[in-house]
Length: 129
Image (cartoon, rainbow, N blue to C red; front, side):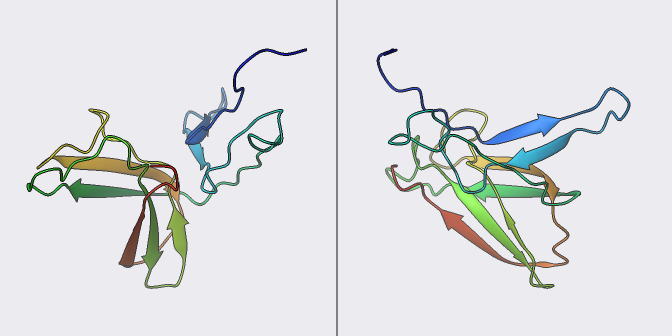
C-alpha cells in the first residue's frame, strides 16, 4: 500500500501527566530522530528518558546587523554544569516562529538534570537548515 509522500514525523518533546499527579513531565527528543515506518526516512521506534527535574530559563539575543535573524536555523543547545553533567535540548523555536533581527527570545527548559552552576552553553544548528 502506498500513501504517497513522506510519513516521517519529527517531534521536539513529549509531555506526560497522570490523573493523580498534576506535575507534567517532559521527555525531549535530544537525538532529533525522525519517526517513520520507512527506514529510509527515520527510525520505527524512539525511546525517551527523563533527564531530570530542574527547570532552566535560557534567553537568546539576536544580533542587529543585516541578515542576523533566521527562520530555519533548527537551534538546539547543550548546557554543561560545573558538576560535569550535560543537558540536551530539542529544537528551540521562538514564539514568533523565527529568530528576528534584534529580538530577545526566552526558552523554559523543563525536566532537565541538575547542573549546578552552568559553565558552558553550546549552540547547534540543524544539519538541514
